[in-house]
Amino acid sequence: MEPLNNTTELGAYDTAINVIGGLKDCNILIKVLDSHFNQSDTLKDLFNQRNEFNLRTERSRTRIEREVRKVFLQFSNQDHQDLIQGISRECIPLQDKQLFLFWQLALNNRLFREITARVFMKTYFSGRASISKEDIIAYLKESLSQNESQQISWSQNTINTLSTKYLNLMSKLGFVSSGRIKTFIHVRPSSEAQVVFLYFAKLYSPNASNILTNELLPISFIPSEDIQERLKRLSLKGLFNMNFNGVALNIELIHSYKGVCDVLYS
Image (cartoon, rainbow, N blue to C red; front, side, top):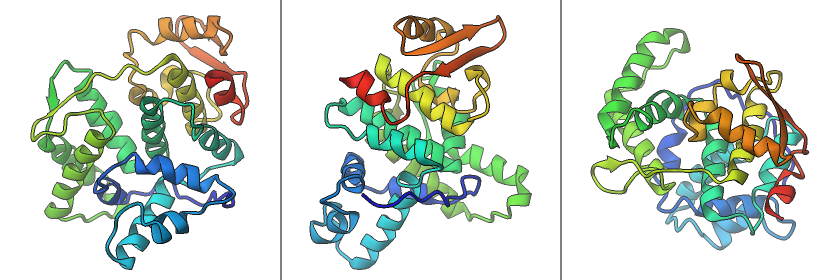
């Protein structure tokens, strides 16, 4: 297993979406997690010796390996690494693993997180049947104009590519259709995945207990009007502690980051 690396600058914008969204099959990223935490395997073997990404040149392999490491294999602390190691278990259903990849990417990549929370999920819950490239483009243009302090000067071509690759990625993760019109696919996280989401949310905001104010909540795929009832049912199963005072919905995690997947998927 490769060593913990907690040097990621989670607040910076970058265009990693272009690389990840360009992968032919995002399920290969599950193998990336397996290789990272496997004592007898390495990412170098996966990328170079076995070339499981099916890349033609060493330059492409190096570039994609760098971006994959940055967005999926960076950990803010030991708890974060323990959680990601746990979700690589073979017994976890593919649909849940795809959600975990999605949440890990959102946790580590600011641009992906903000597009997802402020555009994708907002449109998903609005009742619209589909989302378009133009929705993403409009958000990026507005966001760039309001964040001059970030000193980002992306060209129109870069913005167009980001929008296209973002929707391609969401299609490969199973959240929208693969056709020209990106129709939403209904996502209902399993009970186990909903509990794991709370651990991702805690990693994002470790000093806050009120899940209703957590900026990751919109990407949980849980409708805001259902959140209290769903979490209440799960807390009654003894999976975590919950307290609702009419304003704050406070969550207390009772399992370790290292052991929660053993409890949920045993």
